[in-house]
Length: 270
Image (tube, rainbow, N blue to C red; front, top):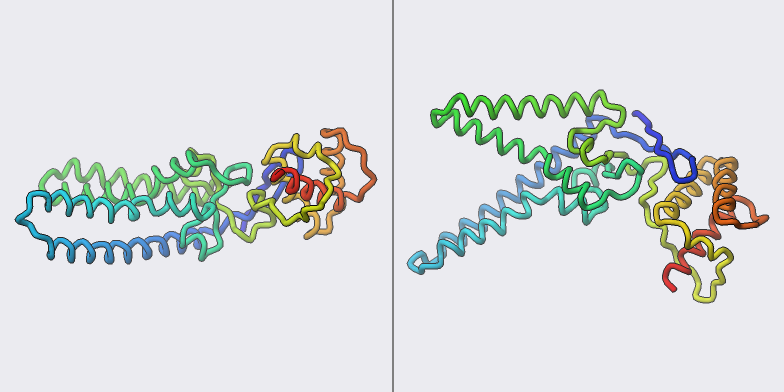
């Protein structure tokens, strides 16, 4: 299992585990199974409605095709919708413990999810099917071109995942995203929010001058330092934050970082 390091705003690298190829493959197969069963169920719904429709009515043809479109939308947008709503995961990724993050370790933007979706395997499988259809129907040259194009794309995908440093496929490279293990050593996109008492008194209001990305990095650095018992990591981050925000404090690095997160949670909702 390979490890990549992502630099944070405080010049401290966070480590992420890149999943093995078999995990990615199994996750993909699980998603294909989900889509297969959905397609079968949607097809049955369509057939039942079409069979019981009154075709003597003028608008029936339009209604049935509208239903077909509605039923197909979830099929084609499966990965896009789930990765956006499930924090970078589909059903397959969730089961196999995988997650999509951006190259900074945070949550990808909508545009990044869109780029990954545009270059998903399903579209190229459709092109492959078109190629087979054209070949069978007589236009063998065009059909062969489509088939070879799709095969070349999938071979390139496999090679990139196998040899690239971050195991990125074409969609990931263009979207600047990475697929990581969810049990990775750190994950800076995890929520920073925590319960803070209403009578809590913030110690360092300067924390609000930091960006959301900085706050996420502080949380991840603190969690990593605690897990590893790495005092130097916490101390380095604390000193950089103190210098940046012009804070004087004698707190221990761990306590200081925890108070910063509490201050942020209290002040961000006031």
